[in-house]
Amino acid sequence: MATGDHPTHPLTALETGTTGLDLPPGGIVRGTRSGAADQPLLWISDAEPPAALWGTLRARHTRTGLWPLLLEGLSDRDPDRPWRSGELDPDPATDPAAHDVDTVLAQWWRGVLPVEGEGAQGRAVVAPFGDTWPGLAAPGSPREDPDECATEFARFLVLDSWLTAPRIGLVPSTRGADTLADLGWMGPANYEGDMSTFSAVLRSWEERFGARVVAVGFATLYLSVAAPPTDRDHALRVAAEHFAFCPDNVWQSGTPTLATYADSLVDRAFWSFWWD
Image (tube, rainbow, N blue to C red; front, top):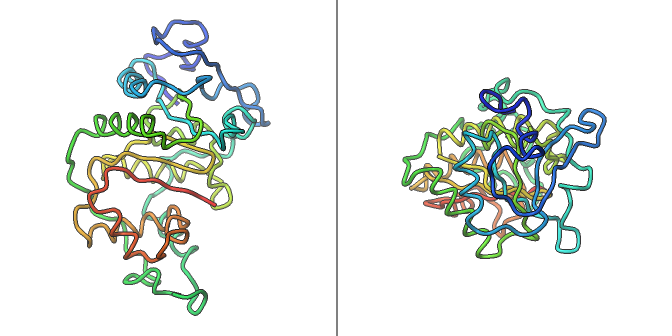
């Protein structure tokens, strides 16, 4: 959680009106579970935000300690889930810095490997790597400033109506990667319960690929990517990380193999993830 020159809890400044931010109508969401009872978790708008607001709030993050997120509702009929429905639980989260990213991804990789003979493709899904975790992909080469890339992506998500019932949220976090753990987001709970492990991977992607967390949904995640892989071999290594991080991205695709999934990552300026 952000500290430094900010109040002990940055959302306090929103409640007292001392941030200087020009925000649409909205309110503070507090924790309802035992470990986060009455803890302020985020501020969320009551309606869809202007397309430019994410970028404006991102530019103020250093001063406010509040990272903006576009928050996707579960559906048009249920736009408040999970943000206002008591489904955020930061209590189980550990410190993202305590997790070695290569170790985390290798463990997940071993857990999602298909069993030979099961399904139509078996181990062909993870060819050419097979049982062996290939290790972390090399960093990409930045094509633009990561924050400018993120601002453009946020505008696109709003203007192109990609998100269901979007709201703008503000989360007290030192960086976008940590928002998942700080919020107690539970989107991949059927896959992994400690969101700090996801935040650890996102920190690494911030550093290697200029990735920024821009939008989050009930079980969806959207990142801008300023330094994506530019050739198929590099993209295949990145695809292996994505498969370990979110196997449904591959399993639920039309042709579920790392090779075909990797083709979709070449020069792509955003990544999206969905957990069943």
